[in-house]
Length: 195
Image (cartoon, rainbow, N blue to C red):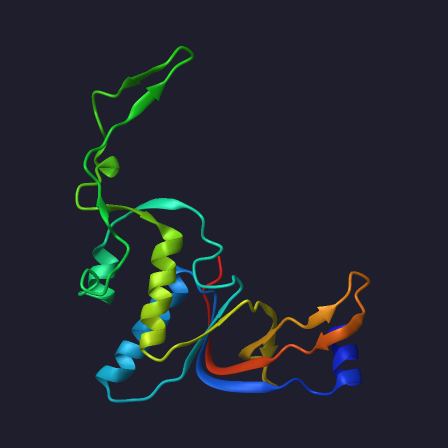
């Protein structure tokens, strides 16, 4: 069934309104949510922000390790160490290996772009989860387990938000006993920070 057929059959979707709807609960989406709340607090304003995260929790779909330059984190949350950020292992050295058919050898020259002094070896999933905790502490609502399935437009063609996916659709594309229409998340601004 098409979305319109489902809406015709099951009535209108429920909706919630926010100042900002952020699609994607990765590092960029969480950092944007945190910064929006910080800017609002600096101006003594209240701004409602929601983040849609497809994973079961922030960071659940981010599996890679990484080397992180903390410069952006220093700007976003200068007290990140006191807040318990999961940046525990500073880079202790840099090595560039040349791979051959029979083994490896160290490169005598390491290009500047490969120097990681002052950076940290991290789990990007753990950092993202921690950023989600920081965002929630500032009043950001995070909806884990929900995907944005449809972009919503107003009558002038401007983006007005997103709709989450319908629940309870069988493999045949038909609703079954647990069917529930997705929800509309409407925002004055919609930020796409997905992948």
